Length: 508
Image (cartoon, rainbow, N blue to C red):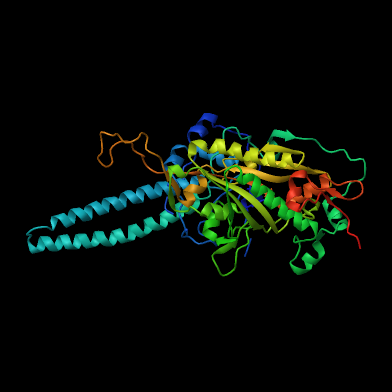
């Protein structure tokens, strides 16, 4: 999912700089992904980049949904989890989680002891008894029942507290991810080079004004700042980018979707975003449990919520078109002018559900698709392996693609691709049933004989941006502007623009 709008939580602005310490070995995280156990529940949304909690919504103490969190694994790997939280600038409080878990285990043990005593008393009451003995047993059973009611209620409340605290723990991290803040990210690939212009170049804002492509002033009056009207050929360019991206990605076996753009807050949370946190990027609808989506990743992730998929259905690949809405809380400065950081935009998103052992492979497939798309447009860009401090809570590993934008005189993020492993599926309740390890034997016709599929497992989910329309419009206008003020359209897009090859000045 593209995070150039930065679906940030309040945690992003309150955490200190990352520690350089990293005590975990690469092999440890490769062998032990963080486990989340299952029970599957307009202010502004984008993914929370520091912690994925918020199941209660609005400060409530009872979670609307429960993630499938393996607390025993967290306790047994305390040092590993603590280091990961530190490296990712997360505000998750591991000490509180473990304290609550210890209290939970002790209370659960006491509840089980009283239940056993109550059952023992009930068994003693069977058969003929002296009236005084029976009455004593009745009184004892009554006392045990009353004690159990209190303890079981305490256990429910403690379980809720534990769940809410643990939901803020981020996913584990791929062993090859660089540790540190965004500047520690590593270039994985670079395509093309910066174009040398023989004339004074313009930024996309000036080009759009000269070619009558945008109207920011009218949009500001109608909707507020960071909104825009697309006009004339800019409309054709947006539609061309969307149709081209869907057509190209569909050739790779992805199923096209157009998604809902309003979803339940609980679905947003279960995907790893915080719709009602301070400085959230999510627009929540007042008086409802619904939000506007900041990315199609959210409604697509919810399609198979609370389901068990046949192994034969995997992988499932979607390419989804939607409008996206982001508050862009805290965004300011020249770098946000024009189309670069806006409240509403169109986007084409790729999403994959797959077997756990295949997610690294599909992560490479997604980033390769993105790189091929942008290379075919003739853009100069670099792909970055993002550092731990820039990972959203759901991401195990994330690649960003930044294109050169000469008018802005800098690189700007146009896409990203994230492997979320089972972080989202444990929250959304998406499992699959593995195929039998061996075919049933012809000599063993009895039901259940032959191969066994074993227990269900959580799928892995991945997401990647094929096209974030405003960022690509910027890249195209600024990179392909001509000395006469016109803009050449990249060859792959021309069939989707009725053969139009150049954006020209309007004749009066």
